[in-house]
Length: 64
Image 1: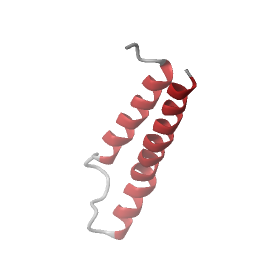
Image 2: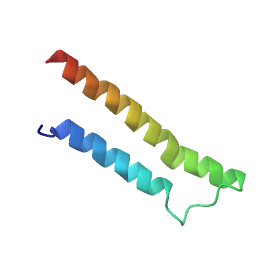
Image 3: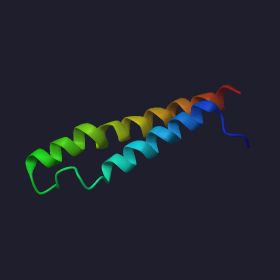
Image 4: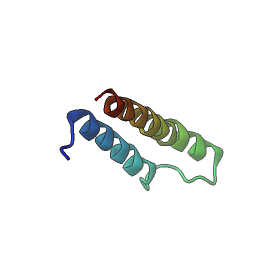
C-alpha cells in the first residue's frame, strides 16, 4: 500500500501537534493559564487534525 500525499500531510500535522503538546517549555497544567495555552495551541488543533483528517481520508477510500 502506497502512502498518498494527503496521508503524509495528515500524519505530519498530527505528529507536529502531538510533539507540541508534550513540550516542556509550555506552562504546566496545574495553572489555569497553562491549561488554556495547552488547549488552544495543541489539544484543539490536534483533535481537529485527527478527526477531520480521518474523515477526509476515509471519504477518499469510499470514493474508489
